[in-house]
Amino acid sequence: MDCPELAYTPFDLNFVQGNTPGLTVTVTLPDGVTKVDLTGAVIYLTAKEDPSEADPGLFQLSTVSGDIDISDQETNLGEYVVTFPAAATANLSALKEYFWDSKVELNGILQTVIGGKLTLTQAITQAGT
Image (cartoon, helix red, strand yellow):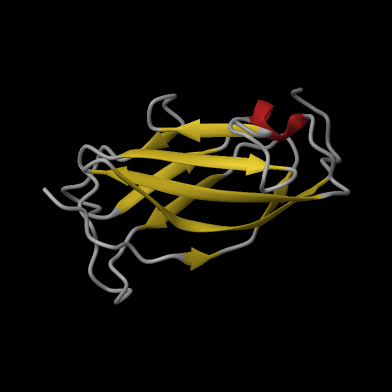
């Protein structure tokens, strides 16, 4: 089975260092409307200091590691949810700009669907850490 060309969306992320934010991504065809069934897909999200670094860079999340969920394709066709573990960003500098992207591997074809810059705001409250 072939894999259709997927749309790419530039998107910058900014969240608080050490928090566990979620990100919902909708994968579509290039028309930006037609959602893609992600059943059986392997999805990665990687952050790097320099885009040319080897994987896993600063951190890499995936459906394999359980940080990316595609389990509800019946109700939320084309969507996946990324949960950033606190440990992924806890040691990164809040004064620096990083790069990130997310790739979908579907039917053996790997395509970047979203990515951009990643900046962190320094955490102020230390309670519960």
